[in-house]
Image (cartoon, rainbow, N blue to C red; front, top):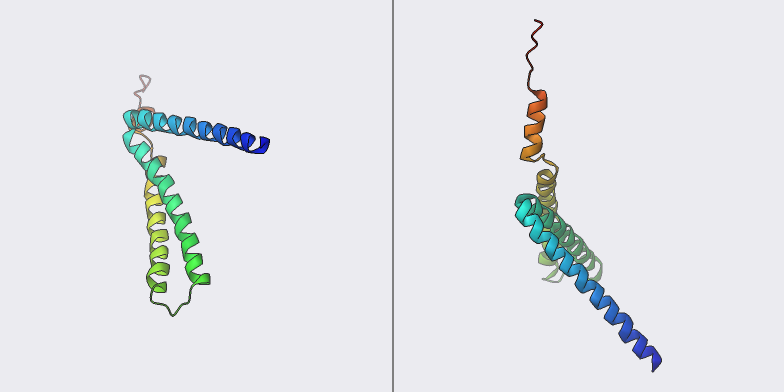
Length: 122
């Protein structure tokens, strides 16, 4: 009986911790969307594309090793999973480009540093 109470306490602590983490993620996304909307959306798509590619890879492996290749549902399941993986790679590449690109303020600062200065001694 004591084991069930401890299990309930452990699960309660885990659920409360997951709720706090979820709340912090929502707050971080809200602040990010206000301050840097494009970069925040790129980060979200970056993470979701990675998740989709991982799940599609698992599904492709299950379709390849655990289903009969002569069944009619093998081809759409397998090649659909491969298509999701390829699309996720393209989405991640675009999101990575957006995340690595300098911001407007950084580009202005680089332009100011690279601007020619006039030397009065010439």
